[in-house]
Length: 249
Ligand SMILES: C[S@@+](CC[C@H](N)C(=O)[O-])C[C@H]1O[C@@H](n2cnc3c(N)ncnc32)[C@H](O)[C@@H]1O
Image (cartoon, rainbow, N blue to C red; front, side):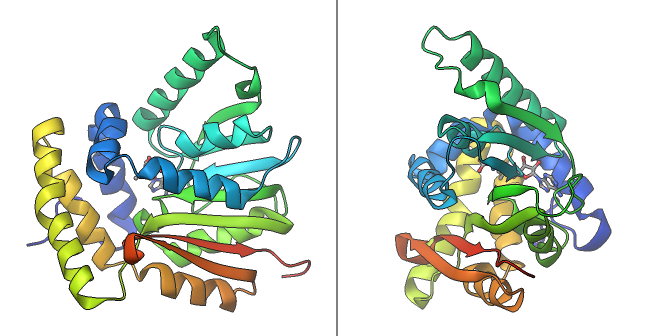
């Protein structure tokens, strides 16, 4: 059965926008529940691969409620988090206000801002950022290849491109078990905690149409990125694609 939130082509963005508008308030809670909290570790790895230093400029695309953007800012970078969903950005902005007002604030979030925009048409000139990250975004774009090209375009020569997303395990047995989890348990968690099983059934539907880590790595090589790496977690159920923009592309 097809999913109401998945449509190919030009209408894709509107449906994806509706999906995230509907779950924004519960997004962080559901992330913890469906990944057993592990998404925090995977995002930490994204940030370590982005390897930002104080003064670096970093861009976190499809930033949602801002987990990766906050972590990059804590490492001293000047960070822009970009997303097209007003509702997801509202949650990110609220977190930002709280972190600025917190007595424990170290001032690092002064360098963080959130911006509404389309990851497939970035409002930045070429060669602008030392690191460009994207967590659970590439699979949602109308064209993942177009999104990757935009990431590379705005990265500086030598800049790090880091993409975290659901993966496709190479082992057939593990892949079937994992897809069964995405088909049954994850929508059930969506139903119980968010009243929206379809939004969570969308994960499997979108993953079926996404070629995942190995094809993304192949495309990164075709686009002439250097040091291309795939970091698999949980037997490839989750993965990071990493590459560096060479001096000339
Ligand atoms: C699954 S959430 C990921 C949020 C966050 N990066 C994280 O890892 O928790 C995907 C986000 O991508 C955003 N998104 C999807 N397509 C987009 C596009 N074309 N441009 C900008 N944001 C987009 C959605 O609004 C949503 O906030």
